[in-house]
Structures are given as structure tokens and as C-alpha cells.
Length: 77
Image (cartoon, rainbow, N blue to C red; front, side, top):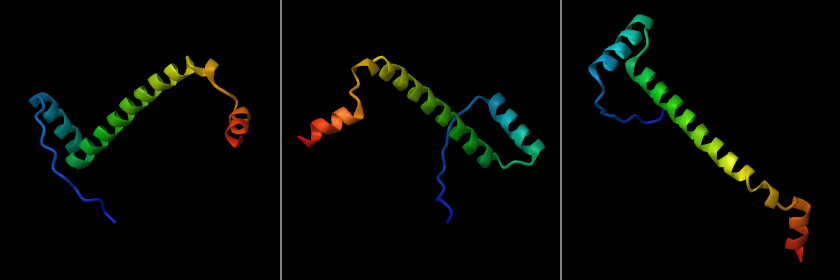
């Protein structure tokens, strides 16, 4: 089943818009598909950056971690 589509109107520099249109035209790509894919890739990259920051911060707290079996023993009591 196809996911519903929405229109996303944004203003971009004319040079950028022309580059994207030319790129898509020369490669036979649909403009909307290309832009959607680019947005998804950038979102994934930014989310990964956030995850790496979280991991770094959690690593600093790792010395405070309790072994799982020890934690579970305390929970059963």
C-alpha cells in the first residue's frame, strides 16, 4: 500500500534548485523522489550524530552501571 503524499513548499537558492533539476533531468530521476531521498538521508545522518553524542555521554556514566544479574536479584526481593 502506498503511503499518502504531502506537499512541502520550501524556498531554496535558485542555483541550488537549478542544479537539482539539471541533475535529475540528466539522470532520468523524478525531482520529488530525489528531494525526498535527500531529506531522508540527511535526517538519518543528523539522528546518527545525536545518537553518537548520547553514546559518548552514556559512556562517561558507564562506571556507575550495575551488572544485570545484580540488578535483577535486587528487583526480586
